[in-house]
Image (tube, rainbow, N blue to C red):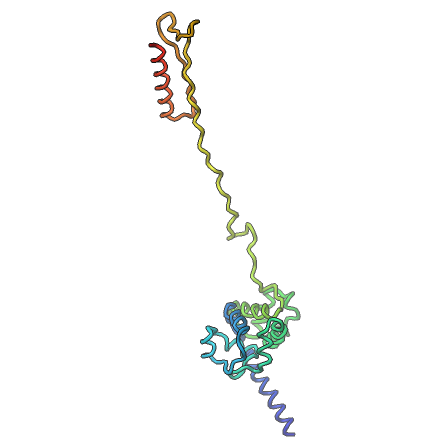
Length: 238
């Protein structure tokens, strides 16, 4: 009779601890949750799991996270074998899958398949089960726990920005390379010549010359061309 009473008392104690743990789930940042599991990979089961231990490893929410999941209890690991199962990558997902489903039992009892649930469905379950106001941080923490446990919850996965959607920068297009306009080579001034090949002055003694000027030339280029023509004319008239 004594053994039966002890067993019932033990079950009641576990139920009370579980109820207290699930009174309100953690609202830890996803980065803090990630660091706890990453740090556990290199840690043997500690003798104590208290705030001093968590601070020494820069894991501010470690006590809350590990206690909520049932990995820690009353400031120490519940079971060294469980600690090591969560540590090792080969067994982590399976171990965490059991712990997360048990820790969030009210959610998994209300939602048959979280993989098919919408964000609104999950949010409604958190409001109903935990009497929450703003559920944002609680849902992010739930999504992080499920990710480490290998539980698919597409509705809580970060959304990827679509190309061309609002707030997304369009692909960068470089402006076409600017090419410097080529300066046309100056054309030699043409002068009228007589039959002996000498410049012809015509009947009036004047020298005839033609100048070709491009409309794309700058004022400086035009002045240079006129100076060249003047020099050629002066040389021809000597």
